[in-house]
Image (cartoon, rainbow, N blue to C red; front, side, top):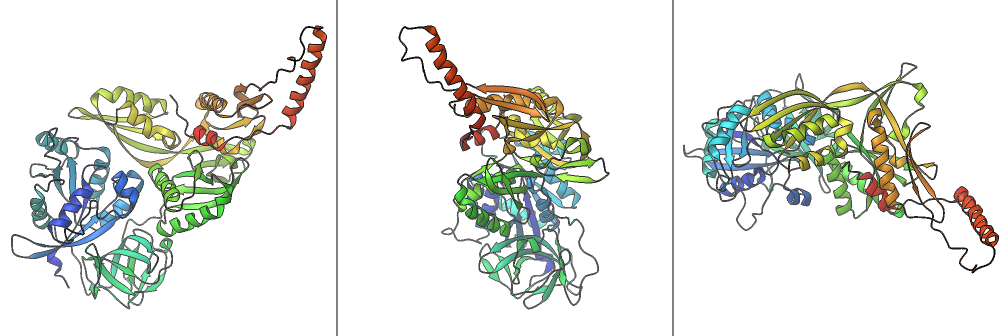
Length: 600
């Protein structure tokens, strides 16, 4: 049982690719938690995707024993948090489990948007922040300029920022000493009723759901009956342990300690991030603040490329849902794509990760329809409908008005790219709120409709700023807008998988781009195929794929013109009949290419 004054709980805050996982690796290595033989890069990242992309998707924890210069051996609990905006809620709960944070900033790139967002979360949670300048060994590093930038942009004292190189190991002992001396010890009372924060959970095929918890008051021990205050579920604990990073069973977890518990919990959905764990017989009076349900922001349809893979896809969805409670899905059918699922995600990165995991881990090839957001439809009969799928849109005459979700976007960009970033935001119906400078970098805050962002905003932002702009956003509210449903008709048949909700001012342009794209993608037939974009009964754009024609007059050499005319008229009648009964099969590649629409 550890003395509470010798415990330090901290997490590492950084933008993607600023060296967060590498620093965690060095801390683990230096404290001897893992032998050199077992050491590998990104040791806390368990998924292949995390390693390849260099990002953290699931929060993870490791317990380190460190003998400090003052002679005491401290227990350091490091929580490795995700850095991406899609997982902002998970990050806020991980930070709530700590007393301090290391703010890692790349000494050559400086403060980025996600660094800012997560630092403000840490400040809101009253965490002690220790700035760390990473990659000081690079020729492009400018530690003094970045120190000044941290003070200007974030507003915290960076005079004592620790210069390190996580790759080479320079300065890592100083970081360990700073954790012990600058970060406060946790507070808590062992004699009070149990109160613990549920930091994260994942599914283990042998143990069921494993819960990562931070004990605030009381203690967790094997055999105890616990209760989740958010869901009301009760469970008897089978095992209590800590990660070093190997799992190690312990007798008891006391105040200030972070560890894992298992107790025959069947589904991750029963253990919600941010929930309060207490003892069933002697519960705590009030739950911890800040708990909320995970809410899907972006929706897309997943359909198997081969219809025979539908059952495999269903199985894959079920298994992913076991591990990720924020991912939701329900079955849907499409006239063009057959059976599939309508899935909800926390954001675009979350969508990409789930899609990649299905294709890699379960070997099912899938088509993803264009991502859309939730719209609020206020009906004339005073009811309100939440619409996830453009194909479900009711008759326009029944709708009073439509509302769409808006976000507040924060973009950090070097001065020379500011003009093109402002133009991009204005093109996407953005409203500028603020423009400030920190050195040679501008920070722009815009209100933007989420519908315009989920499409390809991030890719366009990266291309107009040569990859230098960083972007972070948070949901604000719903606002009324003049929205219409744009339907795509191929040979007068509507293709539901390509229908989308767009702003009226942009409908014509979006329809024209879609028609031109499909004209190049759909193979020619023996008859003419019209491709149209329509709003209700009004066609806003049309392209025509010309027919393949057989030269029926080739056998007539010389002779009267009326013979040739007769053959051509006969062919014309046949084509007419063909167009009436002909069916156009849109190839899968055409769908995929059309849904990856680019607005250049």
